[in-house]
Length: 384
Length: 100
Image 1 (tube, helix red, strand yellow):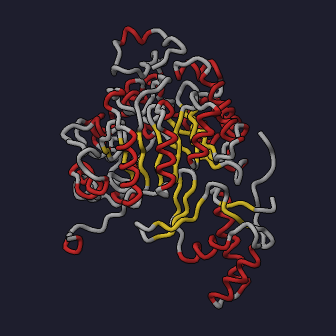
Image 2 (cartoon, one colour):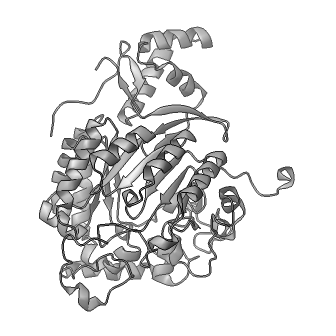
Image 3 (cartoon, one colour):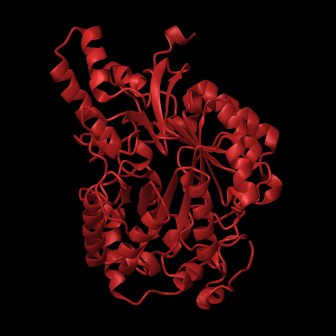
């Protein structure tokens, strides 16, 4: 009886991040996937994804981002893109691109793919391959980007930046223009999961961040009208928290390879949740009725200083996963906030940026490796 | 890096939605939306009227003249408003000039 529902009207999600698999040939130490990776046996099958995409379109979802892991590992990617496109969804492929050969691209274009986002680890080949833990990754990515441009699909380059590659940011922006990108995301690593384990190896100094911001602002002026540059700052250096996911359960839904629905891709790090599954609930029920999506929705859950803060509907209390990771309380104010009691936790990490970076903990199946194993760089070219 | 400026629109420009940008009516939301790479815009009624006329054939001058007749408003004001709006959308990568 919707007419008697006392809750305020709820807009449908704008977009769904469909993580089709956690399998990936790369091993980037800042991967946004959880430390405990899902294995192939648990992945949703084609038919289930078709049903989920239909439910998403019926709910009013506008865009679906096919991601992973590496979504091209799934042989049914073209089928799913075609299904989403026929349902009226705007389809985006978020890929490392090392598997994006001409045949796969042709199939995706025929299926109606709207847009491709390719991540780059660096502009320097040796460094890019080292971070990805994959031989020739950089070359394969450049070749794939060129194919995307020839195919007439709009390309976004996602340049992931951190203390070990920020010196080359200007060259990375130039490279995005040369690759024919229409959009560039200069994305500072955000410190959850794998990246949090590698924080000391990746977090830039304040001086590096300021130089990067100046580089981006200058490039935005020079390239106005030709390249749109989105800039995601590392919030450890900020005084105010980010509006994480534009607010919990406000605009986005993340679906894991096994069909678990999450308000953000890191939400499984939070304790005390029973996240809904597309096996047992429709996407509409997940969005409207599940405890998980309602837990931190709006402002009623907030503690002080958020509860009475005039920014509470601007930043929505910041990031719940960061609050839990650094304070042990998922309902606490994001420790990025200058008003947070726990702000000192971030200062410790920032102070550590004065030290030499430690070796990476590479992203691999089976979760965290013994730290002894990570002392040496990963073997290049190793799959999975 | 290649040099040069982004597009500057004037009354003679012929605006069109870029390839892979769609103006689309979403039935579930009962709302027009502009779908673009990793971006959604929710245009207001005026913007919808303008975007529906951006067919890659009509000039901004003729689009503005049509809107002026429809809304019984001064054509010069409408034209400068339309240029301003479309210039902003061009810089966001939503539209371009079919002459370019």
